Length: 169
Image (cartoon, rainbow, N blue to C red):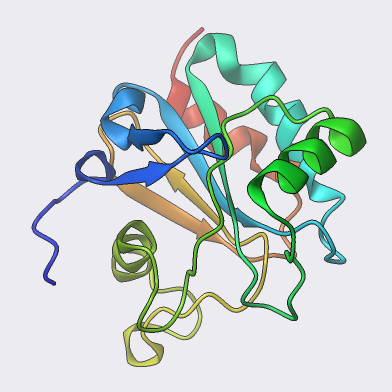
């Protein structure tokens, strides 16, 4: 199925609570979209993502978490278990979505789009494959994917990039 959208606003995904959500709900916001996992070495990044969200949400930032079990089966839980884990351990209050695939034939259409827009180190020949949990995509207020960051990039190091997209306070 070919995607015809040119921004992320043409996509939708199911929330952890099972509600369908259009990404058009986030029009006009700066977005940090992250594939997450509860049992990963990078899981403590939830704390940094929550700090970014709390720091900049009033200025127009939303962090969107997309749990994924494709890397070392590090997200085996149900939606309810994922939600409890994130809130209890990291105080996550930013929007979290139902578990998805980010690579392969069953990759969520949003992630196919993100990888096409910002293929990363593996480039277009590698299909833009996501290498691991906590890969981050930064999206501007117009829904354009402007940057991709590796799993090893700590959320707090993205503050300047986010501030540029948010504009003057």
